[in-house]
Length: 522
Image 1 (cartoon, rainbow, N blue to C red):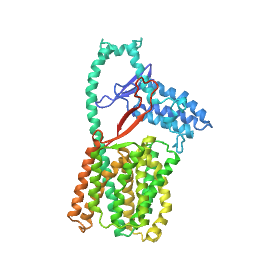
Image 2 (image 1 turned 45 degrees about the vertical axis):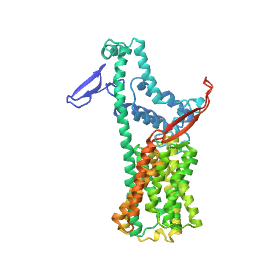
Image 3 (image 1 turned 90 degrees about the vertical axis):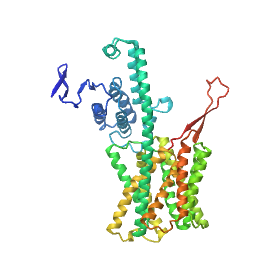
Image 4 (image 1 turned 30 degrees about the horizontal axis):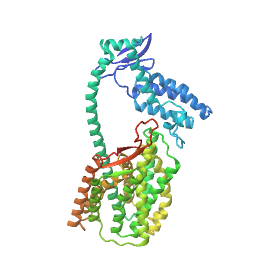
Protein backbone atom coordinates (compact mmCIF):
# COMPACT_ATOMS: atom_id res chain seq x y z
CA UNK A 1 0.00 0.00 0.00
CA UNK A 2 1.43 3.40 -1.00
CA UNK A 3 0.17 6.82 0.06
CA UNK A 4 0.45 10.17 -1.73
CA UNK A 5 0.53 13.53 0.00
CA UNK A 6 0.39 17.07 -1.39
CA UNK A 7 1.34 20.06 0.78
CA UNK A 8 1.62 17.82 3.82
CA UNK A 9 -1.88 16.29 3.65
CA UNK A 10 -2.92 12.83 2.52
CA UNK A 11 -4.77 13.07 -0.80
CA UNK A 12 -4.86 9.48 -2.07
CA UNK A 13 -3.54 5.99 -1.97
CA UNK A 14 -3.06 3.02 -4.25
CA UNK A 15 -2.09 -0.62 -3.98
CA UNK A 16 1.01 -1.87 -5.71
CA UNK A 17 -0.80 -4.52 -7.75
CA UNK A 18 -1.71 -4.43 -11.42
CA UNK A 19 -5.36 -3.60 -12.05
CA UNK A 20 -5.83 -1.31 -9.01
CA UNK A 21 -6.63 2.21 -10.18
CA UNK A 22 -4.63 5.13 -8.79
CA UNK A 23 -6.91 7.42 -6.78
CA UNK A 24 -5.47 10.90 -6.42
CA UNK A 25 -7.37 14.17 -5.92
CA UNK A 26 -6.19 17.73 -5.84
CA UNK A 27 -8.63 20.34 -4.52
CA UNK A 28 -11.31 17.67 -4.84
CA UNK A 29 -10.72 17.09 -8.56
CA UNK A 30 -9.57 13.54 -9.47
CA UNK A 31 -6.24 13.56 -11.28
CA UNK A 32 -6.81 11.03 -14.04
CA UNK A 33 -5.90 10.79 -17.73
CA UNK A 34 -9.07 8.96 -18.75
CA UNK A 35 -12.72 9.88 -19.02
CA UNK A 36 -14.33 10.46 -15.62
CA UNK A 37 -16.81 7.94 -14.29
CA UNK A 38 -19.76 8.64 -12.03
CA UNK A 39 -17.84 7.06 -9.15
CA UNK A 40 -15.10 9.67 -9.58
CA UNK A 41 -17.67 12.43 -9.05
CA UNK A 42 -19.10 11.14 -5.77
CA UNK A 43 -17.33 13.98 -3.95
CA UNK A 44 -19.15 16.56 -6.09
CA UNK A 45 -22.53 14.93 -5.51
CA UNK A 46 -21.94 14.72 -1.76
CA UNK A 47 -21.07 18.44 -1.63
CA UNK A 48 -24.27 19.34 -3.48
CA UNK A 49 -26.37 17.06 -1.25
CA UNK A 50 -24.77 18.51 1.89
CA UNK A 51 -25.58 22.08 0.85
CA UNK A 52 -29.15 21.28 -0.08
CA UNK A 53 -29.57 19.30 3.15
CA UNK A 54 -28.55 22.33 5.20
CA UNK A 55 -31.23 24.45 3.56
CA UNK A 56 -34.05 21.90 3.59
CA UNK A 57 -35.06 22.72 7.18
CA UNK A 58 -35.55 26.41 6.41
CA UNK A 59 -38.74 28.02 5.22
CA UNK A 60 -37.57 29.39 1.90
CA UNK A 61 -39.61 30.87 -0.90
CA UNK A 62 -39.20 29.85 -4.53
CA UNK A 63 -37.14 33.00 -5.14
CA UNK A 64 -34.85 32.17 -2.21
CA UNK A 65 -34.31 28.59 -3.40
CA UNK A 66 -33.60 29.84 -6.91
CA UNK A 67 -31.01 32.30 -5.60
CA UNK A 68 -29.22 29.57 -3.62
CA UNK A 69 -29.14 27.29 -6.65
CA UNK A 70 -27.72 30.03 -8.88
CA UNK A 71 -25.22 31.40 -6.36
CA UNK A 72 -24.00 28.42 -4.32
CA UNK A 73 -24.76 25.16 -6.12
CA UNK A 74 -23.69 26.49 -9.50
CA UNK A 75 -20.42 27.79 -8.01
CA UNK A 76 -19.60 24.30 -6.70
CA UNK A 77 -20.43 22.69 -10.04
CA UNK A 78 -18.69 25.44 -12.01
CA UNK A 79 -15.32 24.61 -10.39
CA UNK A 80 -15.57 21.07 -11.78
CA UNK A 81 -16.95 22.18 -15.14
CA UNK A 82 -13.88 24.33 -15.75
CA UNK A 83 -11.51 21.41 -15.21
CA UNK A 84 -13.10 18.19 -16.54
CA UNK A 85 -15.91 16.84 -18.70
CA UNK A 86 -18.63 15.70 -16.30
CA UNK A 87 -20.43 12.41 -17.03
CA UNK A 88 -24.00 12.84 -18.26
CA UNK A 89 -25.34 10.74 -15.36
CA UNK A 90 -23.74 13.08 -12.83
CA UNK A 91 -25.21 16.14 -14.54
CA UNK A 92 -28.67 14.51 -14.58
CA UNK A 93 -28.38 13.68 -10.87
CA UNK A 94 -27.36 17.24 -9.95
CA UNK A 95 -30.24 18.68 -11.97
CA UNK A 96 -32.60 16.20 -10.29
CA UNK A 97 -31.43 17.34 -6.83
CA UNK A 98 -31.82 21.00 -7.79
CA UNK A 99 -35.29 20.40 -9.25
CA UNK A 100 -36.41 18.59 -6.10
CA UNK A 101 -35.06 21.35 -3.87
CA UNK A 102 -36.62 24.09 -5.98
CA UNK A 103 -40.12 22.56 -6.01
CA UNK A 104 -40.22 20.67 -2.69
CA UNK A 105 -37.51 22.29 -0.59
CA UNK A 106 -35.89 18.89 0.11
CA UNK A 107 -34.70 15.70 -1.56
CA UNK A 108 -37.98 14.04 -2.42
CA UNK A 109 -39.65 13.36 -5.80
CA UNK A 110 -40.91 16.57 -7.40
CA UNK A 111 -44.25 15.06 -8.39
CA UNK A 112 -46.76 17.68 -9.48
CA UNK A 113 -44.05 20.09 -10.67
CA UNK A 114 -45.65 22.67 -12.91
CA UNK A 115 -42.67 23.23 -15.22
CA UNK A 116 -39.88 20.92 -16.35
CA UNK A 117 -36.27 21.69 -15.46
CA UNK A 118 -35.31 22.25 -19.10
CA UNK A 119 -37.84 25.08 -19.26
CA UNK A 120 -36.48 26.59 -16.03
CA UNK A 121 -32.97 26.62 -17.53
CA UNK A 122 -34.07 28.85 -20.41
CA UNK A 123 -33.24 32.56 -20.43
CA UNK A 124 -35.75 34.90 -18.82
CA UNK A 125 -36.64 36.49 -22.15
CA UNK A 126 -37.47 32.97 -23.41
CA UNK A 127 -39.82 32.21 -20.52
CA UNK A 128 -37.33 30.53 -18.16
CA UNK A 129 -35.72 31.57 -14.87
CA UNK A 130 -32.17 32.02 -16.12
CA UNK A 131 -30.62 28.94 -14.46
CA UNK A 132 -27.57 27.80 -16.43
CA UNK A 133 -27.81 24.43 -18.13
CA UNK A 134 -24.89 22.45 -16.66
CA UNK A 135 -24.25 20.34 -19.74
CA UNK A 136 -24.05 23.37 -22.05
CA UNK A 137 -21.92 25.28 -19.56
CA UNK A 138 -19.52 22.35 -19.21
CA UNK A 139 -18.99 22.30 -23.00
CA UNK A 140 -18.37 26.07 -23.01
CA UNK A 141 -15.77 25.71 -20.26
CA UNK A 142 -13.90 22.98 -22.15
CA UNK A 143 -13.87 25.21 -25.24
CA UNK A 144 -12.30 27.89 -23.03
CA UNK A 145 -9.42 25.49 -22.33
CA UNK A 146 -8.84 25.18 -26.08
CA UNK A 147 -8.82 28.97 -26.29
CA UNK A 148 -6.10 29.06 -23.63
CA UNK A 149 -4.00 26.72 -25.75
CA UNK A 150 -4.42 28.94 -28.83
CA UNK A 151 -3.63 32.15 -26.96
CA UNK A 152 -0.60 30.53 -25.23
CA UNK A 153 -1.44 32.07 -21.87
CA UNK A 154 1.14 31.73 -19.10
CA UNK A 155 -0.36 28.68 -17.46
CA UNK A 156 1.54 25.70 -16.09
CA UNK A 157 -1.09 23.44 -17.63
CA UNK A 158 -0.64 25.05 -21.06
CA UNK A 159 3.13 24.69 -20.80
CA UNK A 160 2.82 21.01 -19.87
CA UNK A 161 0.43 20.30 -22.77
CA UNK A 162 2.73 22.01 -25.27
CA UNK A 163 5.80 20.19 -23.98
CA UNK A 164 4.54 16.65 -23.44
CA UNK A 165 1.33 16.35 -25.50
CA UNK A 166 2.04 18.55 -28.53
CA UNK A 167 5.82 17.91 -28.33
CA UNK A 168 6.83 21.26 -29.78
CA UNK A 169 4.15 21.37 -32.52
CA UNK A 170 1.57 24.12 -32.70
CA UNK A 171 -2.12 23.46 -32.08
CA UNK A 172 -3.12 23.39 -35.74
CA UNK A 173 -0.43 20.89 -36.73
CA UNK A 174 -1.52 18.57 -33.98
CA UNK A 175 -5.14 19.17 -34.95
CA UNK A 176 -4.62 17.59 -38.38
CA UNK A 177 -3.29 14.38 -36.86
CA UNK A 178 -6.07 14.38 -34.30
CA UNK A 179 -8.69 14.95 -36.99
CA UNK A 180 -7.35 12.07 -39.06
CA UNK A 181 -7.58 9.80 -36.04
CA UNK A 182 -10.94 11.25 -35.11
CA UNK A 183 -12.33 10.67 -38.61
CA UNK A 184 -11.33 7.02 -38.43
CA UNK A 185 -12.87 6.68 -34.98
CA UNK A 186 -16.07 8.40 -36.10
CA UNK A 187 -16.46 6.03 -39.03
CA UNK A 188 -16.03 3.08 -36.70
CA UNK A 189 -18.32 4.73 -34.19
CA UNK A 190 -21.06 5.36 -36.78
CA UNK A 191 -20.96 1.71 -37.79
CA UNK A 192 -21.05 0.58 -34.19
CA UNK A 193 -23.91 2.98 -33.42
CA UNK A 194 -25.90 1.69 -36.39
CA UNK A 195 -25.26 -1.88 -35.28
CA UNK A 196 -26.21 -0.99 -31.74
CA UNK A 197 -29.44 0.69 -32.87
CA UNK A 198 -30.35 -2.32 -35.00
CA UNK A 199 -29.67 -4.63 -32.07
CA UNK A 200 -31.81 -2.47 -29.77
CA UNK A 201 -34.62 -2.38 -32.34
CA UNK A 202 -34.59 -6.15 -32.70
CA UNK A 203 -34.41 -6.61 -28.93
CA UNK A 204 -37.35 -4.24 -28.43
CA UNK A 205 -39.55 -6.09 -30.92
CA UNK A 206 -38.49 -9.47 -29.54
CA UNK A 207 -39.27 -8.30 -25.99
CA UNK A 208 -42.70 -7.06 -27.07
CA UNK A 209 -43.54 -10.20 -29.08
CA UNK A 210 -42.46 -12.57 -26.30
CA UNK A 211 -44.34 -10.73 -23.53
CA UNK A 212 -47.46 -10.14 -25.66
CA UNK A 213 -47.69 -13.73 -26.86
CA UNK A 214 -46.93 -14.96 -23.34
CA UNK A 215 -49.67 -12.93 -21.70
CA UNK A 216 -52.19 -13.97 -24.36
CA UNK A 217 -51.43 -17.64 -23.79
CA UNK A 218 -51.59 -17.24 -19.97
CA UNK A 219 -54.85 -15.27 -20.14
CA UNK A 220 -56.34 -17.81 -22.53
CA UNK A 221 -55.56 -20.60 -20.06
CA UNK A 222 -56.84 -18.49 -17.16
CA UNK A 223 -60.14 -17.61 -18.83
CA UNK A 224 -60.85 -20.75 -20.88
CA UNK A 225 -59.62 -23.34 -18.41
CA UNK A 226 -60.24 -21.73 -15.03
CA UNK A 227 -63.20 -19.50 -15.93
CA UNK A 228 -61.75 -16.13 -14.82
CA UNK A 229 -63.57 -13.97 -17.37
CA UNK A 230 -63.11 -10.56 -15.70
CA UNK A 231 -60.89 -8.96 -18.34
CA UNK A 232 -61.27 -5.31 -17.25
CA UNK A 233 -60.50 -6.05 -13.59
CA UNK A 234 -57.53 -8.19 -14.65
CA UNK A 235 -56.20 -5.28 -16.71
CA UNK A 236 -56.52 -3.05 -13.63
CA UNK A 237 -54.42 -5.56 -11.69
CA UNK A 238 -51.86 -5.46 -14.52
CA UNK A 239 -51.47 -1.70 -14.19
CA UNK A 240 -51.42 -1.91 -10.39
CA UNK A 241 -48.44 -4.31 -10.63
CA UNK A 242 -46.78 -1.96 -13.12
CA UNK A 243 -47.36 0.94 -10.72
CA UNK A 244 -45.63 -0.93 -7.88
CA UNK A 245 -42.60 -1.53 -10.10
CA UNK A 246 -42.38 2.12 -11.20
CA UNK A 247 -42.63 3.29 -7.57
CA UNK A 248 -39.81 0.92 -6.62
CA UNK A 249 -37.63 2.07 -9.52
CA UNK A 250 -38.32 5.74 -8.71
CA UNK A 251 -37.31 5.13 -5.09
CA UNK A 252 -34.10 3.45 -6.29
CA UNK A 253 -33.35 6.41 -8.57
CA UNK A 254 -33.73 4.65 -11.92
CA UNK A 255 -36.70 6.84 -12.92
CA UNK A 256 -36.03 10.56 -13.03
CA UNK A 257 -38.52 13.21 -11.96
CA UNK A 258 -40.55 14.44 -14.91
CA UNK A 259 -43.74 16.33 -15.61
CA UNK A 260 -46.81 15.79 -17.80
CA UNK A 261 -49.59 18.41 -17.84
CA UNK A 262 -52.77 17.10 -16.28
CA UNK A 263 -54.89 17.59 -19.46
CA UNK A 264 -52.44 15.47 -21.50
CA UNK A 265 -52.41 12.77 -18.82
CA UNK A 266 -56.20 12.66 -18.55
CA UNK A 267 -56.63 12.47 -22.34
CA UNK A 268 -54.21 9.57 -22.53
CA UNK A 269 -55.90 7.65 -19.70
CA UNK A 270 -59.34 8.34 -21.24
CA UNK A 271 -58.27 6.96 -24.63
CA UNK A 272 -56.53 3.95 -23.01
CA UNK A 273 -59.50 2.99 -20.83
CA UNK A 274 -62.00 3.41 -23.66
CA UNK A 275 -59.70 1.20 -25.76
CA UNK A 276 -59.75 -1.60 -23.17
CA UNK A 277 -63.48 -1.47 -22.50
CA UNK A 278 -64.33 -0.87 -26.15
CA UNK A 279 -62.41 -3.94 -27.31
CA UNK A 280 -64.14 -6.14 -24.75
CA UNK A 281 -67.59 -4.80 -25.67
CA UNK A 282 -66.84 -5.11 -29.39
CA UNK A 283 -65.87 -8.77 -28.95
CA UNK A 284 -69.07 -9.42 -27.00
CA UNK A 285 -71.48 -7.69 -29.41
CA UNK A 286 -69.84 -8.61 -32.73
CA UNK A 287 -68.91 -11.82 -34.45
CA UNK A 288 -65.26 -12.89 -34.31
CA UNK A 289 -64.85 -12.08 -38.01
CA UNK A 290 -66.07 -8.50 -37.66
CA UNK A 291 -64.00 -8.08 -34.48
CA UNK A 292 -60.87 -9.04 -36.46
CA UNK A 293 -61.81 -6.60 -39.24
CA UNK A 294 -62.14 -3.86 -36.62
CA UNK A 295 -58.67 -4.65 -35.28
CA UNK A 296 -57.22 -4.54 -38.80
CA UNK A 297 -58.80 -1.13 -39.40
CA UNK A 298 -56.58 0.34 -36.65
CA UNK A 299 -53.69 0.53 -39.13
CA UNK A 300 -55.48 2.84 -41.61
CA UNK A 301 -56.74 4.96 -38.70
CA UNK A 302 -53.21 5.23 -37.26
CA UNK A 303 -51.92 6.21 -40.72
CA UNK A 304 -54.61 8.89 -40.91
CA UNK A 305 -53.56 10.31 -37.51
CA UNK A 306 -49.91 10.47 -38.55
CA UNK A 307 -50.79 12.13 -41.85
CA UNK A 308 -53.02 14.74 -40.18
CA UNK A 309 -51.04 15.54 -37.02
CA UNK A 310 -47.44 14.68 -37.97
CA UNK A 311 -47.60 15.47 -41.72
CA UNK A 312 -46.22 12.02 -42.55
CA UNK A 313 -46.13 10.88 -46.17
CA UNK A 314 -45.84 7.24 -47.21
CA UNK A 315 -44.22 5.91 -50.38
CA UNK A 316 -46.11 3.63 -52.74
CA UNK A 317 -44.18 0.55 -51.58
CA UNK A 318 -44.94 1.32 -47.95
CA UNK A 319 -48.66 1.64 -48.68
CA UNK A 320 -48.73 -1.58 -50.69
CA UNK A 321 -46.85 -3.48 -47.97
CA UNK A 322 -49.43 -2.34 -45.39
CA UNK A 323 -52.23 -3.56 -47.67
CA UNK A 324 -50.46 -6.92 -48.05
CA UNK A 325 -50.19 -7.31 -44.26
CA UNK A 326 -53.88 -6.49 -43.83
CA UNK A 327 -54.79 -8.98 -46.55
CA UNK A 328 -52.71 -11.78 -45.04
CA UNK A 329 -54.02 -11.31 -41.49
CA UNK A 330 -57.58 -11.05 -42.82
CA UNK A 331 -57.22 -14.29 -44.78
CA UNK A 332 -56.11 -16.29 -41.74
CA UNK A 333 -58.36 -14.72 -39.06
CA UNK A 334 -61.59 -13.41 -40.61
CA UNK A 335 -64.25 -16.11 -40.97
CA UNK A 336 -67.89 -15.33 -40.26
CA UNK A 337 -68.85 -11.67 -40.54
CA UNK A 338 -72.10 -10.33 -39.11
CA UNK A 339 -72.76 -6.68 -38.24
CA UNK A 340 -75.27 -4.95 -35.97
CA UNK A 341 -75.68 -1.28 -35.05
CA UNK A 342 -74.53 -1.33 -31.43
CA UNK A 343 -71.65 -3.69 -32.25
CA UNK A 344 -70.56 -1.38 -35.07
CA UNK A 345 -70.60 1.65 -32.73
CA UNK A 346 -68.60 -0.26 -30.10
CA UNK A 347 -66.04 -1.24 -32.75
CA UNK A 348 -65.71 2.38 -33.96
CA UNK A 349 -65.10 3.62 -30.40
CA UNK A 350 -62.60 0.82 -29.75
CA UNK A 351 -60.65 1.40 -32.96
CA UNK A 352 -60.36 5.17 -32.64
CA UNK A 353 -59.56 5.14 -28.91
CA UNK A 354 -56.86 2.50 -29.42
CA UNK A 355 -55.31 4.39 -32.33
CA UNK A 356 -55.36 7.66 -30.36
CA UNK A 357 -53.87 5.97 -27.28
CA UNK A 358 -50.98 4.52 -29.28
CA UNK A 359 -50.43 7.81 -31.10
CA UNK A 360 -50.34 9.61 -27.74
CA UNK A 361 -47.63 7.25 -26.44
CA UNK A 362 -45.28 8.42 -29.20
CA UNK A 363 -46.51 12.03 -28.96
CA UNK A 364 -46.01 12.40 -25.18
CA UNK A 365 -42.55 10.84 -25.26
CA UNK A 366 -41.44 13.27 -27.95
CA UNK A 367 -43.17 16.33 -26.49
CA UNK A 368 -41.97 15.95 -22.90
CA UNK A 369 -38.70 14.04 -23.59
CA UNK A 370 -39.85 11.07 -21.53
CA UNK A 371 -38.49 7.54 -21.41
CA UNK A 372 -40.73 4.50 -21.42
CA UNK A 373 -40.53 3.97 -17.66
CA UNK A 374 -41.06 7.71 -17.04
CA UNK A 375 -44.29 7.68 -19.05
CA UNK A 376 -45.46 4.49 -17.36
CA UNK A 377 -44.76 6.08 -13.99
CA UNK A 378 -47.26 8.83 -14.84
CA UNK A 379 -49.99 6.82 -16.57
CA UNK A 380 -50.01 3.45 -14.79
CA UNK A 381 -51.26 4.70 -11.36
CA UNK A 382 -54.19 6.58 -12.89
CA UNK A 383 -55.12 3.67 -15.14
CA UNK A 384 -54.85 1.19 -12.27
CA UNK A 385 -57.08 3.27 -9.99
CA UNK A 386 -59.73 3.92 -12.64
CA UNK A 387 -59.85 0.33 -13.93
CA UNK A 388 -59.93 -1.25 -10.48
CA UNK A 389 -62.81 1.03 -9.52
CA UNK A 390 -64.85 0.60 -12.70
CA UNK A 391 -63.62 -2.89 -13.68
CA UNK A 392 -65.93 -5.01 -11.48
CA UNK A 393 -69.00 -3.10 -12.70
CA UNK A 394 -67.96 -3.34 -16.36
CA UNK A 395 -67.20 -7.05 -16.02
CA UNK A 396 -70.55 -7.68 -14.33
CA UNK A 397 -72.27 -5.84 -17.20
CA UNK A 398 -70.39 -7.92 -19.77
CA UNK A 399 -70.47 -11.36 -18.10
CA UNK A 400 -73.26 -11.08 -15.48
CA UNK A 401 -70.76 -12.48 -12.96
CA UNK A 402 -69.30 -10.83 -9.87
CA UNK A 403 -65.55 -10.80 -9.50
CA UNK A 404 -65.66 -11.27 -5.72
CA UNK A 405 -67.90 -14.36 -6.13
CA UNK A 406 -65.30 -16.18 -8.24
CA UNK A 407 -63.94 -19.41 -6.74
CA UNK A 408 -60.28 -18.49 -6.28
CA UNK A 409 -58.04 -21.57 -6.17
CA UNK A 410 -54.29 -21.85 -5.76
CA UNK A 411 -53.72 -22.55 -9.44
CA UNK A 412 -56.00 -19.72 -10.61
CA UNK A 413 -54.29 -17.24 -8.26
CA UNK A 414 -50.93 -18.44 -9.61
CA UNK A 415 -52.07 -17.71 -13.19
CA UNK A 416 -53.37 -14.27 -12.14
CA UNK A 417 -50.01 -13.41 -10.55
CA UNK A 418 -48.18 -14.77 -13.61
CA UNK A 419 -50.39 -12.69 -15.90
CA UNK A 420 -49.70 -9.53 -13.85
CA UNK A 421 -45.96 -10.21 -13.90
CA UNK A 422 -45.83 -10.65 -17.68
CA UNK A 423 -48.07 -7.60 -18.11
CA UNK A 424 -45.34 -5.35 -16.70
CA UNK A 425 -43.10 -6.36 -19.60
CA UNK A 426 -45.98 -6.04 -22.07
CA UNK A 427 -46.80 -2.48 -20.98
CA UNK A 428 -43.15 -1.45 -20.96
CA UNK A 429 -42.35 -3.06 -24.32
CA UNK A 430 -45.34 -1.37 -25.94
CA UNK A 431 -44.12 2.04 -24.80
CA UNK A 432 -40.55 1.23 -25.88
CA UNK A 433 -41.57 0.10 -29.38
CA UNK A 434 -43.98 2.97 -30.05
CA UNK A 435 -41.45 5.45 -28.64
CA UNK A 436 -38.63 4.12 -30.84
CA UNK A 437 -40.79 3.81 -33.94
CA UNK A 438 -44.40 4.96 -34.53
CA UNK A 439 -47.88 3.66 -33.84
CA UNK A 440 -48.23 2.50 -37.47
CA UNK A 441 -45.01 0.49 -37.40
CA UNK A 442 -46.09 -0.97 -34.07
CA UNK A 443 -49.43 -2.02 -35.55
CA UNK A 444 -48.03 -3.44 -38.80
CA UNK A 445 -45.15 -5.41 -37.36
CA UNK A 446 -47.21 -6.18 -34.29
CA UNK A 447 -49.36 -8.52 -36.35
CA UNK A 448 -46.45 -10.94 -36.08
CA UNK A 449 -47.92 -11.56 -32.62
CA UNK A 450 -51.23 -12.54 -34.23
CA UNK A 451 -49.44 -15.09 -36.41
CA UNK A 452 -47.51 -16.50 -33.45
CA UNK A 453 -50.65 -16.70 -31.29
CA UNK A 454 -52.40 -18.66 -34.02
CA UNK A 455 -49.43 -20.99 -34.46
CA UNK A 456 -48.99 -21.57 -30.72
CA UNK A 457 -52.74 -22.02 -30.32
CA UNK A 458 -52.70 -24.81 -32.90
CA UNK A 459 -49.66 -26.29 -31.17
CA UNK A 460 -50.92 -26.26 -27.56
CA UNK A 461 -54.71 -26.20 -27.86
CA UNK A 462 -55.32 -28.51 -30.81
CA UNK A 463 -55.14 -28.22 -34.61
CA UNK A 464 -58.83 -27.57 -35.14
CA UNK A 465 -59.23 -24.88 -37.80
CA UNK A 466 -55.72 -25.30 -39.23
CA UNK A 467 -55.93 -25.60 -43.03
CA UNK A 468 -54.26 -24.42 -46.20
CA UNK A 469 -56.37 -21.25 -46.13
CA UNK A 470 -54.92 -20.20 -42.73
CA UNK A 471 -51.35 -21.16 -43.66
CA UNK A 472 -51.59 -19.10 -46.87
CA UNK A 473 -52.76 -16.07 -44.88
CA UNK A 474 -49.84 -16.42 -42.46
CA UNK A 475 -47.33 -16.55 -45.32
CA UNK A 476 -48.85 -13.46 -46.99
CA UNK A 477 -48.84 -11.52 -43.71
CA UNK A 478 -45.20 -12.35 -42.93
CA UNK A 479 -44.18 -11.38 -46.48
CA UNK A 480 -46.00 -8.07 -46.07
CA UNK A 481 -44.22 -7.36 -42.78
CA UNK A 482 -40.82 -8.01 -44.34
CA UNK A 483 -41.74 -5.76 -47.27
CA UNK A 484 -42.93 -3.01 -44.90
CA UNK A 485 -39.71 -3.11 -42.89
CA UNK A 486 -37.65 -2.80 -46.07
CA UNK A 487 -39.86 -0.17 -47.76
CA UNK A 488 -40.26 2.12 -44.74
CA UNK A 489 -36.51 2.12 -44.01
CA UNK A 490 -35.61 3.41 -47.47
CA UNK A 491 -35.22 7.16 -48.10
CA UNK A 492 -38.67 8.56 -48.81
CA UNK A 493 -40.40 5.44 -47.54
CA UNK A 494 -41.91 7.28 -44.62
CA UNK A 495 -41.13 10.95 -44.08
CA UNK A 496 -42.40 13.81 -41.97
CA UNK A 497 -42.74 17.02 -43.96
CA UNK A 498 -42.36 20.37 -42.19
CA UNK A 499 -42.31 23.92 -43.46
CA UNK A 500 -40.13 26.62 -41.95
CA UNK A 501 -41.31 30.20 -41.59
CA UNK A 502 -39.86 32.85 -43.94
CA UNK A 503 -36.68 34.45 -42.60
CA UNK A 504 -36.33 38.23 -42.58
CA UNK A 505 -32.57 37.85 -43.22
CA UNK A 506 -32.94 35.67 -46.29
CA UNK A 507 -31.87 37.24 -49.55
CA UNK A 508 -33.49 34.53 -51.66
CA UNK A 509 -36.98 35.07 -53.10
CA UNK A 510 -37.93 31.50 -52.21
CA UNK A 511 -38.40 31.92 -48.47
CA UNK A 512 -40.60 28.89 -48.04
CA UNK A 513 -38.23 26.02 -47.31
CA UNK A 514 -39.31 22.44 -47.39
CA UNK A 515 -37.45 19.88 -45.32
CA UNK A 516 -37.94 16.30 -44.44
CA UNK A 517 -37.23 14.43 -41.27
CA UNK A 518 -37.15 10.69 -41.63
CA UNK A 519 -38.76 8.83 -38.72
CA UNK A 520 -36.93 6.14 -36.82
CA UNK A 521 -37.73 2.95 -38.62
CA UNK A 522 -36.96 -0.76 -38.44
